[in-house]
Image (cartoon, rainbow, N blue to C red):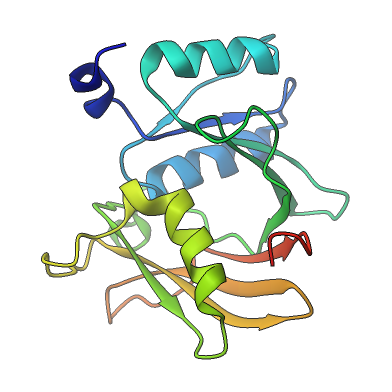
Length: 190
């Protein structure tokens, strides 16, 4: 595929497990609205190999599969970076405490244009680099000014190989988190 075709493509595909519940579909939609330039696709009966082929043909390098977790009202994510490896990235991501947009309420609407990241001071630089490499195409360029439509990923702490934090709007009037997360890293990544 030509480079100029790949440049216009979405950098991230969001899909679900094979037979998603209504809750998983809602979370998938929330995540796709939260991540600018991402593409959401119903998986249907596609295998991982078929998803990888679809991504290659569409110029998509990274995939997030939304699936249910053992905990009620919690979701786990499987992340892939097909440029580096066809294997799943060895991290465990759990999302919880969702605040879904309310129909007709403009204050809860998500109109995200870009993403900011806010790290706690105790997070090592090497881990910040891993995070930036995965979500780099979605981040605010350094030269541009953040707006109210930006979302901020706040990494509150890093203890025992786990990140904890939340995703909030950059609007000072509406700081209610959209969701909270917990990311457990494999010791090799950390």
